[in-house]
Structures are given as structure tokens and as C-alpha cells.
Image (cartoon, rainbow, N blue to C red; front, side, top):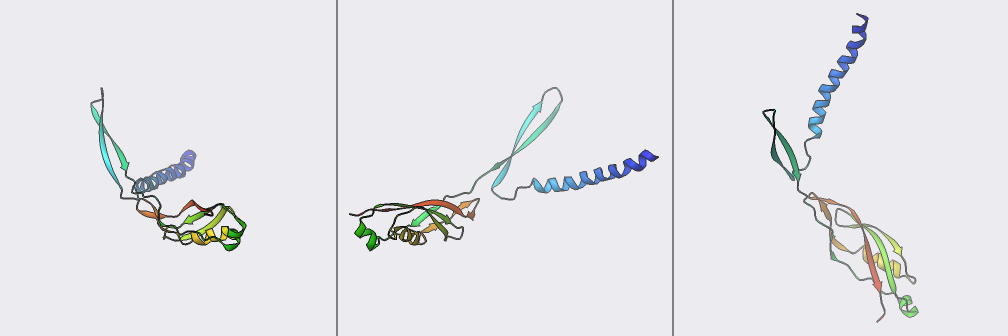
Length: 150
């Protein structure tokens, strides 16, 4: 009787956990996206006289890359032109999911206001956001502005 008093609560807890777990696992295994379909493969296990089916979910990715539509030119400053400065400004930009540049940080700089000019131009970039499974997502990309005197 003493053993039954000790074992019964554990057995009840185990049974309740298995029941609740089976409901949770059933919900977790249902895919959230609609870009899938199920294929069924039949495997026969010889010697047992039964047929087992494996179900494989095949996911299709409805994704598209970032597309830059318009990249404004950065303007040479008068001071940089007089000093004969040439080079490349590299910027790290966040292309947000709503089609707007959110953050621009310089990776390489040039003097006489050329870095600031490149950053102003970067905020004017027009683009189509990157999408994964049909949902726009923010991405971080490198932008380069080349300054050359002609």
C-alpha cells in the first residue's frame, strides 16, 4: 500500500504529461506557411506483410532578393575637388522591410565631406525589399560610392 501511495502521483503526472504533450506536438508539427505540399512514399518491409508510408514535406521557398531600383549619385564637394581627392566610400546600410533605408554606417571614409555626401545619397536609394516566403525582411548590405575626378 505504501508503494502505491508513492507511485500513483508519479504515474498520474506521467500520464497527464503524455496526453498534453501529444496535443502540443501535433500543433508544432503543422507548418505555419502555405508554401508546401505532402508527398507519400510507400515502403514495403519484406517478411512482415505490412506496408508503411513515409510522408515527406516538400517546402517551396517563395523568396526574392533585394532589388535596387535607383541609386542616386553622391556629389563631389568643392573642397574635395580642389584637394584632388579620389577614392571609394564603403557604407553598411540597413534596407528595411518597408522599402526605406533605416541606418547607414561608413566602413571606409574619405575626407572633405565625401563620406557625408555618400551617406546622404545612400538614404535616397530606392529598392524593392528582400522577401522570404512572401514576407519582406530587413537586410544589411554594402553600398559603394566611387569618387573620381575627370
